Amino acid sequence: MIILKKKNKKNKKNKKNIDFYICFLFNPKCGCVSLSSFLNRINFINFELIHKSYRSGDYQDPDYWHCNLEGAIKFFKKKNIKLQNIKFISTIRNPLSRYISSYFYSLNFSKVDKFNKDSQDIEEDLISYIENETHFHNFINGKFYLYNNHVVNHFIKLENLVDDIKYIFNIYDIKINNKNIFERLNNKKNESSKKNININNEIKKLVFRYCENDYKYGEYNI
Image (cartoon, rainbow, N blue to C red):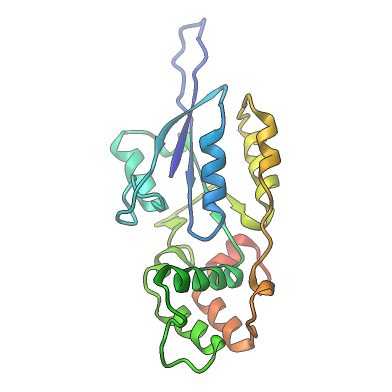
C-alpha cells in the first residue's frame, strides 16, 4: 500500500483546505511490483508520498505490502480522515492468467515440481492448486478490494497498465517532474498462452466460480 497526499496551496482567503489522498493497493500477481516500483521512483510536484507498506503481515495490516481495502479503510479511520477525501485504487488481472502465474510462482518459490504429489498431469495439479491454496484465496473474488459496502474507486489492469496509470494521473492532476518514467512501463500480456497447459472447461469453470467478482469488476470475458 502506498498513500499519496495532495499538497495544499496557500489559501489567500484563509479558508480551510481539504486534504485529499490517493491510496494504491497492491493486489498480488496483478502487476503490483511494476506499479510499486514506478511510484517509488517518481518525483511528485503536487503530491507527497506519506505512507509506504514494506513488509509481510496480516491482510489488514497497513504496513503489509498487500494490505487490503479493509485494512486501508481502518487505517484512515484511525487517523480520523474522512473516506470521502480518499480515492482507493487497486490492481487487477484476468483471473485465469493470474491463477496460472500464481501457480508457477508457488512451484518456483517452494522449489517443487507439483503442488499435489498425487496429480497425474499439470492440468490436474493446477486444479488442485486452485481448490486448495488458502493464502491466495485471501486476494481473489473481491476479498482484496471490497469491504462491507465499500469498493475501490478505480482499477489498474495489468493488461492495460500504462494507460490506466496515465488515466489516474490525469483525472487527479498528479504532476511529476520525470515524465519520461512512463517509458519504463510496459503493459503485461496474459501468461496463459505461454504455459504448456490445456485450459479445459473444468479449469475455466472452476476459476470463474472462485473469481466471479474479479471477472465482474475487471470486465473480463469468461
